[in-house]
Length: 539
Image (tube, rainbow, N blue to C red; front, side, top):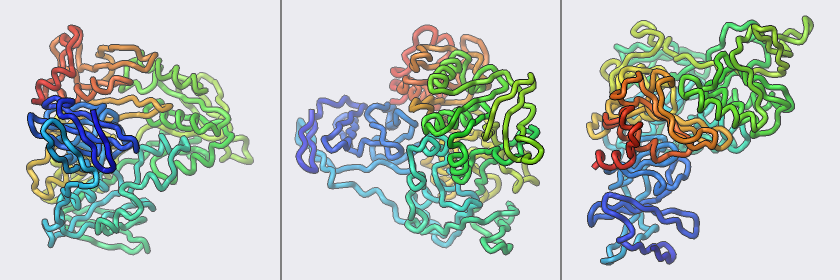
């Protein structure tokens, strides 16, 4: 029960159990979140700062408040950020204890800002303006770093939200300016030197030095006290004849997305690739409603086959087909062909190994990416820069994001997901500041989501494949959770799970996985209460 007057809201204490939380939606669409531990209460802005989810619909496990949508995690005591994809903590409000009730004053915000007085005489250079580079620079300032920060990006734009390119931006639901991370004045506001259109040609790890071409094309050498390299990945172009023709696109940057939007109007579009990028592009263009047709071509007999089972894949295919998408699966592309000899760069068709021809005006390749590890070619293999669980390669030198083959909770692996890259920024920041209170990768698990037609399929953990699985619920009604195992032994713990519509179950799974207590095959088959177990083990 609440009673709201102006900036104050009165809440009945008895509404909230100890160790729990509750959210209260107000008439102005704001949300207040209250957490309780015995007789201690805290009040926060209850909307996740990432995408506005009601945090009260999520799960509280110990001192961790976890967003139901994208698993951003906040400390229940002060609102501080524990896990991305949010890049900020929660606003905390002052409250008054009235005995049986609490009064929250939303006009009185508790200031948790930290003075930038640490390592003031040092210089941090960050190479790469993607998620990992942005988060490192951003969090360094939030956590008190007072030295100079230089962020160097080959891109011509300030850091922006790349995952939304294949979701809201291509669908026409979000303008370019809304994708900027931290807003249009982020670098200036945080006293960060942002250097765009500049290419780093060489990294000298032992010297903590880079050599680059600046905006005027002049070579420059820059040395740093801390060097963070997060150069990301490049789209892979398969060895298909005609893949170099005009009208063949990959999607990695804002400019790529703009080009696809402009070129796809009233055109027959063929998407090659059935991973989550290919599926998101198909869904977004279908939602935009501006193409003549969309056909998805895949080598396997299902979509997202390395992530989900055939049953879930079939449900996704049905969802796409209901929105007008055509599928050609179990297919090998032989050639992307032009109209005729006089206009060889104008695409006309995609030719398959079985002789089938698919009419095409433009082709979008969703055939994976490869890490940009060339700057580290002398010290690591091309599958990733091998770093420890703090992302460190050498003393004061860090490799983050898509290029990092990092040691962590689930072993040494390289993961190409946005949330993981943001995690890397948090971990590298803590390493630079020597902050032992922030978890390393040894205490974090991977998570990603894909949005298709407004439905969000979420995945936590990392499985070798999707074949050893237990499926609960109904993928056809978009309400399921599926657990994945590395073998078929009854005592093997699940290493990953995916869901549509069972968000709290997936949050609980992620927490148990983080704690090393993921359920076994036998437990799940016996009707294991995963939410209750997550609460119990998080106390």
